[in-house]
Structures are given as structure tokens and as C-alpha cells.
Length: 464
Image 1 (cartoon, rainbow, N blue to C red):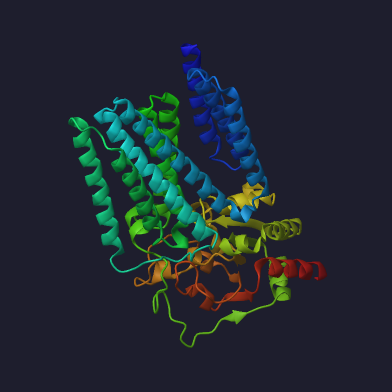
Image 2 (tube, rainbow, N blue to C red):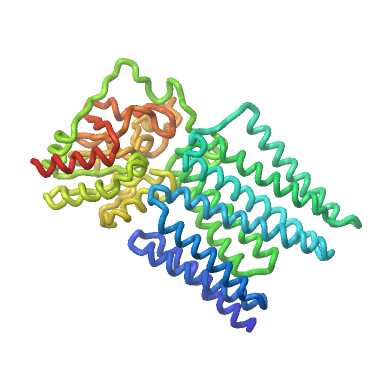
């Protein structure tokens, strides 16, 4: 039976790896999810068999209740709210790892079986797991607009965070010394340490703005993976070590890639309070004017263009306009227009946010182009249609050394012959700065809700 369980774990690990490989492409991502889910089912069954579970009724009930909650939540959640669900699911993973580690070490303390190695691993798991839990909850609250998405900062915040972290290190060191002596490890220290980890997780995410939320979600996901892997060492579970390592490694790689796409360090993202309103930064309005347009003129521009690049952003997600945008692209394509979509790595509020929304609207995968693959095409494009993508199209990232986003790679929409921007108002994006693109003489602004604006453009196309 032990050999069969280990073989089952090996199969599950292979399925996890294959699932991650399939997630690399939108065309195979759904199958990747199913393959990884099958691996998780195999791992769960093998773990219950290995543990000699006798109360199968409780186990089956737990799986049923959790499965129903997960299935209903996944079916009912709007695609625009997917970042919030990802944050909540990640919180559950980190919190579960921390709770299991806490329970296991408290059991060992009560039985007098605690070792220094197990205690050290438990402290690490609890710290990382609870930081991921509370940080993900704060990220959820920001994404759900339960608290403001802009950075929440106060004087001495970084000093306070540093002091709390040092206090947690001191608590862990003190308990390790106790465990090595006659008094033994302290239950009270375990509980206080857990509360401190929850506090520092929330304080770390509060000063991070909505513009950086994709990177934060990815980073917290990596934290959860590390916590799960450490928990695997604590309870001697090979499958947890493998699964946690895969999640931690993939989350770390994704975090680094997205930070690189923003030309910023991870430290700057976590500690920089990026997204505060920057008065006088990134361009002053002054006496400059913008050129507004109407749906009829936009429809004419699009109909008689040879090449159109659509740039989706969070504004499209908020308006839930992805299906109308997909219909517009299909109608233009049927009329002989070459239509492509340009996807910035950090457009939206989670990694791949725009890809998920457009896939839901049945936009063909071969029409979706990453930034590096399409940036050279804007110069030969007749119309660049920007739908709510603010900071990732701001030329200040190239032209203004004083701008907070200077050096961040952007989509070169300003190189198109004509730029049409769909936006509710002239309010700045998550970075809190004016977009120089809006004052470009070849930029036309179509103000209003993105879904309503695209619908009117579709009607106008039918009348031409």
C-alpha cells in the first residue's frame, strides 16, 4: 500500500507539471486546468489512504461541501471579478498551510515531541502562510472596492513594518531557545507569532496600489507555494513539497517577468507606494486640449481602415464590454479589415486578465498578441483603438524622466496613424498621472461607458 501511494504521488506530480505546461497557451489552458485537477484528486485520495482514515463520512462530507462551494462560486463569478476570486483562493491556500503547521506544532508541543528543526520550519510556514492569507484578503478588498485601491499610507509605516518583522524574528528565536532547554516551546508564542504574521501581511499590501495588483497577486501566490512546500517538510509529505515548489517557482518566475515588464524592481513594487496621486507629475493639463469624437466618426474610421489594433484594458473589464468588442472585431474582420489585439503583460488586475476576458468572448487566440510581438506593428497601423488601457499606453514612460512610470515598457499606440481612446473621463489611471497620449493631435477621445460606446459604434457600422 505504501508503494502504491508513492506511485500515486508520482503520477500526481507529473500531472501537476503537465498542467502547468498546458497553461502556457490560451488554446490549451482549459485542458491544463483539468489535468492539474485530476492530479489533485489523485493526491487527495492517496493521502487519505496513506493516513489510514477511518471516518470517511467526515472526509467525503468535507470534500462535497468544499466542492459545491467552489463550483458554485466559479460558475457565478463574473469574469470581471476573476482577480478577486484568485485572491480569495490564494488566501485559502496560504491560510490552510499556516493553520496546519500551527496545529501540528501545537500537537507536538503537547506530546513533548517537538524538535528544533520542526519548530523552525513551523515558524517559517506560519509566517509565509499567514502573510499570504491576510495580504490576499487585503488585495481582494482593494479589487472589490471595499477599501480604496490607491495606496493607503501613513507616517512611519515602513518603520512599523520593520519593527513588527523584527519582533516576530525575536519571538521565533526565543521559542527556539526555549525548545532547546528544559522549559520547552511555548504555546503562547505560537499564537502571538501567528497574529503578528497576519498583521504584517495586511500592512504590506495596504500601501500597494491597484496598478501593481497583478504583480502582488503573483507574488502572494508564490508565497503560498513556499508555505505549502515548507508544510510538506513539517508533516513529511512529498506531494506537498512537490506541489508547493511548483507553485512557488512558477509564481516567482511570473512575478519577475511582470516586474521586468514594468521596468521596476519587486522591492519598489512592494515598498514604493506606487499609485499615489502625483500632482504635477507625468504631465500637466495646462491649456492643452483634447479632441473628442462620436461613434459615427469612429465607425467610419474603422470601416475604411486596412489594419486596426485593439488595446484592451481595465476599462473594458469594468464596463463588461468584452463581448461587444469581440463582435466589433468580428464585424471588421468580415469586412476585410486586419484586426489584432495588443495585450500588455500587466493590463488589468491579474496576470492574463485581458486574455481571460477575450477568451470568454470567443476571440480567436491567434488574434491576441503580446506586447513584444506587436509593438513593431503600430507604425503601419491605421487605427489603434484603446479601450480603458491608461498607464500601459502613456508615452511619458518613454519621454518624461520625471514621471513615476518612466522606463516602463508600453504599447506603442502613439505610433499609429490615428488613435481612438474609449474612456469615461479624463481622470488618471491607477498610476495617478495624466496620460500624454490623450493630448496627441492624432488622438480622438470617445467619452462614455466602454460597452455603450462600442455598441453605438456597432450600430453606426451597420448604417454605413
